[in-house]
Structure formats: C-alpha cells, structure tokens
Image (cartoon, rainbow, N blue to C red; front, side, top):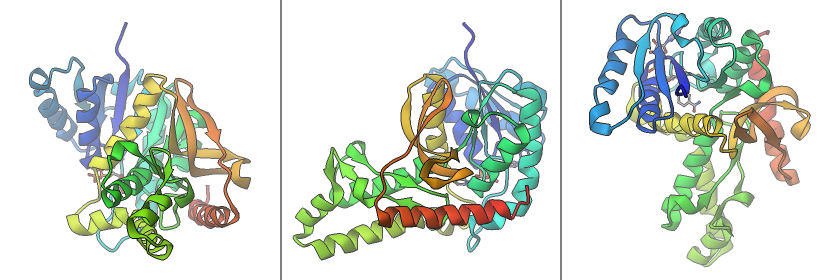
Length: 318
Ligand code: TXD
C-alpha cells in the first residue's frame, strides 16, 4: 500500500520543522512547496540525508511546482509572513491574504481531496479565505491555533505545579488573538481541578486566583513573548508540533479531541464563522464539533472573542 502523502505549502521556519517531524514519525512522504527557488529542495535534501541516521523510510522532497503536490492526503499551509516585534497577528492580513489566495488556488487545482490545515496568520481569517477559495467542504479545511494555545497554557500549569505535562489538560477556545479564551474551570491535573491544587499549594484562594490570572495572561501573550525574545520571526517549533498532532489524528483516524479552528454552524450561537473549538479529528476530517457547556462568564469571553474574529474576517470583504 502506498504511503500517505503530506504537502507543506511554505518551507520557512515552521515548514522546515514540519518536514522533519513528519519524517521522524514516518507519517508519510513529504513534499515541501515554496516560491523561493531551490530553498525547499535544499532544506528537504538536508532532512532526507539524515534518514539513515534517524531511520525513517519516507521520501522528503522540495518543489516550486504545485503539480508535485498532486494526490496529497494532507496539506499544511504556512505560507505567509510572520510577525515582527510590536506587530499584532492582524497586521499581517493584507499581505498574507494575497498569498493565501494563490495558495488555495494551487491546492484546489492540484490536491482536490486533501485535508487542509492552515497555520498562517492571522489564523482565523486565513482559514476562512482558504475554505472560500478552495470551495472544499468545511470538514476538510481547518486551522491550527488551539492545540498550541492550549499546550502553552498546559505547560505553564505543569511548571507552576511541578507535575508532568502529560497529566495536564488545559483548553483554550475562541480566536487566535488577544481575545482567546483559556478555560480555567476545565483546567485539570489528572482529573483534579487546577484551582484546587493551587489553593493547596498557596493555602488561600486569593493567591491561587492571582497565580492563575497570571498564567492566563501569559497564555494569551505567549506568541508575543516568543516574538520579542527571537527579535526576528515568530514561534516555529511548537506550531509545527501542534499541526503534526492534528495531521496524525487524521491520517491514523485517531479521533483525538483537539482544539481546532473550525467552521461553526450554530454552535455557541455562531453561524458560518471559523472559531477555535473542541473537535474530533479522524479519517473524515473534522468529524464532530463539540459544544462545551460554558457558564455566563465564559460565554461572555467567547462572545467577545467571536466578535473580534468577525471584525477581522469582515475586513477582508469576502
Ligand atoms: O499557531 C499558529 N497558527 C502560528 C502561526 C504560530 C506562529 C506563527 N504563525 C504564522 O505562520 C506566522 O505568523 C506566519 O504567517 C506563518 C509562517 O510562519 P514561519 O515562521 O514559518 O514564517 P517564514 O519562515 O517566513 O516562512 C514563510 C514561508 C517562506 O519560506 C516564504 O518564502 C513562503 O512562506 N511564501 C510562500 N510560499 C508559497 N506560496 C507563496 N505565495 C508564498 N509567499 C511566501
């Protein structure tokens, strides 16, 4: 049986890590497309030459021709500019929507049956545009943001409590911007609410509250924290890992429950907008959108985040 085929559109910082992770995990043959001549060929040759050392039997190749993505099962899009210090994700909308339009046309013409995961920023707008231009059913076009935002939240909790990251569940819903919604009430360590553990650690509720608020704020600003430290470009290891988890769940029909930017049709009172929500990802793509029960405060934060997404997407005049 032929191996699955994974196309990476954009061979920059995230694209490079994606290629290496897909190869190391032997998820399938990897084709990296970029408009820069020779660069994707060079980067993938470098990765492929490590195959005898790492022991992966998949091919990793680069191209400047969309025809080479034909037959792809998964397409992961990172094409577009990243943020510079001081920029918000939304500042990228003008330049990246032009890039996304051409990318989506390339995917539509050459990989019409693929499951598409968009990573390019501003995420919620770029996924919307990609789905519109490809015309693919919404189960097959989604965005990666929530896996990463939730992973960041989980990492901060694990470090604070001195427990394994494996035992932390933390969920972030909403848009991939300053209005994202880390759900404190659902955050837990092996089933125990994080607030309970913080209260045990500090001996009083007020301090626990203060520590949690700081972790929530750090989660919301975590992308910017990395941008500032790097000085040039944005996070790339963790976004790549996050998208690979989504691709793997699709390719292996794992049916993992992952926070995903998906097209809402009535859930959370939202119609026809892409927003970050919990989804089941399996062989059918976005097989299910799970609508969690939010309390009034959480719903207000979600509404605020959805309003920001609507404003952003509205500015594209699609
Ligand atoms: O979690 C998330 N969703 C994100 C998203 C987390 C971090 C960064 N995120 C965004 O991903 C970031 O704001 C950017 O919009 C994308 C890609 O970030 P990356 O760090 O990989 O950017 P690079 O290194 O600049 O790579 C972008 C590549 C580069 O090689 C360009 O030549 C290429 O995109 N590019 C194109 N490829 C194909 N087609 C076209 N038209 C094109 N234009 C540029």
